[in-house]
Length: 124
Image 1 (cartoon, rainbow, N blue to C red):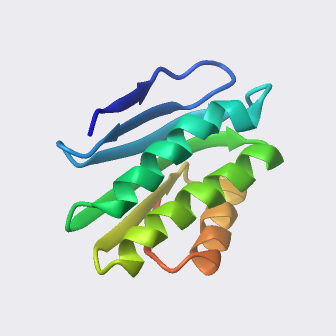
Image 2 (image 1 turned 90 degrees about the vertical axis):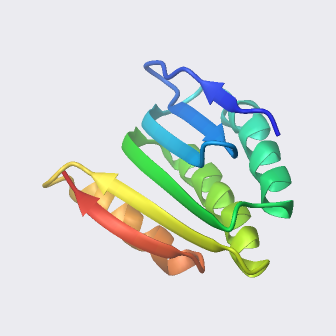
């Protein structure tokens, strides 16, 4: 399975999805003009990955900001990783947020309540 790597911009997050190295990272801002077309290849990649996931998957989110349209896409990403857990694999989401950033902390709490994967909320 090929690596998916997207360079972050002022409007879209940096994304690294690599089954071989076990790196699954999302960081930066997410407010792309066409959110569905931006996230479609990411969701397709994770959907394929979930069919034959590594025994353990650690997904890191270091988001600074995301808009409401991106919020739905992030939930879809987490639900795809949940499919790997449903197939008997271990999945851990590490949700990083800047110390004092209540919005990002609350977002992590909300996602933790919405999907059935293990979560660590980590202030930095």
